[in-house]
Image (tube, rainbow, N blue to C red; front, top):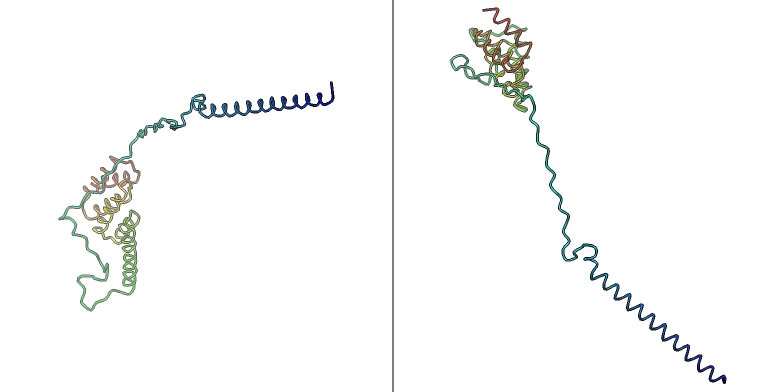
Length: 218
């Protein structure tokens, strides 16, 4: 075989190998594209996914635990009963406690010691009244009731004890002042009835002791 013939054969073999490689590469490229297209088109069906509408997982609502009713319901105590109209005059806003003393001559004045005590009482009354006007609650109402009881102003004590009782019906403190004021005004039976009513709802050693004392006075 001549050299030219041999070179021609090598060239032809090289062209054939090149064409075969091109076919293989083309086939691989077409296969890759087809496979990719199939994966893209049928991927939702294979994996159970719907691309057109992806529904959120349904979460069942969690039932709230039922509220348990306490075994012992809080006792609702009625506030201190209203005062009879013929027993206590309507409450007035007082500017003077002791200085307006009846039965004295027009130009008469209190002794120096009593006058100082009266002025101190007036100042304290003013402060307590301003405190209640600013914060109308049990504490300030009861402070006024105790203040008037200390001054033996029993009608005002009853009124403010009633007011304090409306803010806290379970407290025995205004009930005790109310009963004491009633007793001092000459209404022992009303004082006893008020204490017995409170004890029918709430047990209180202080109320029981005062009730026993008042019953012993009859």
